[in-house]
Image (cartoon, rainbow, N blue to C red):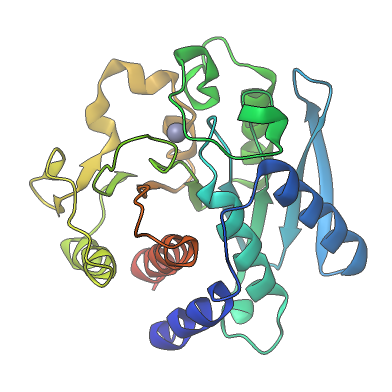
Length: 270
Ligand SMILES: [Zn+2]
């Protein structure tokens, strides 16, 4: 994989991003592109608590990489990132489109708990009941849907698109991983953030991976109640928490999320 080429493709496609899209905008974009382009296939899973179909989109062939956006209320950056990623995957000229993987993408997992009926983003704090990734013992319909998708495709890598962008305060970036990644890859990811003048979060400091990284297995017994522990039985799982900051452009956030994603694929599979 030519990482430099892929990162420059991400930057060029992210240039078109003016703002972080709302859940409804992301959902509609995927529905429309799947009608126009036969390289992307729509699949319908459970209905959520609102009666809305939970949809996922499949592009490419090979081992599966699973991504899902809007897991929690207000965590919106991933929705815009997966749109840009899909544009890159559908562009035959891009080297990203030539990666030998099947991408399974859920544009919006948790619509029910999104602020303003999903029409407009808002920064807010979630409640425990809204965390669809943290209720394996008593799963919500959304949780059942993502489990069904994961069991069908057995992803070698799962990227749940959580973020701290929803938070009213600036939070330094941090990453949870299972299993742990190499120091080399952790350093590469740290450098991506440093390129945007961002320091890694010192609340997390893994002895092997360094500042800003933590092993999700270290969460303790509660981790068993989380979908991540289930995905980790099939492959790698990583969560990359990007912040909100007045000086952080939407396009930069998308660049960061996708650059970290591509680095991760390169680092664990090549
Ligand atoms: Zn979250």
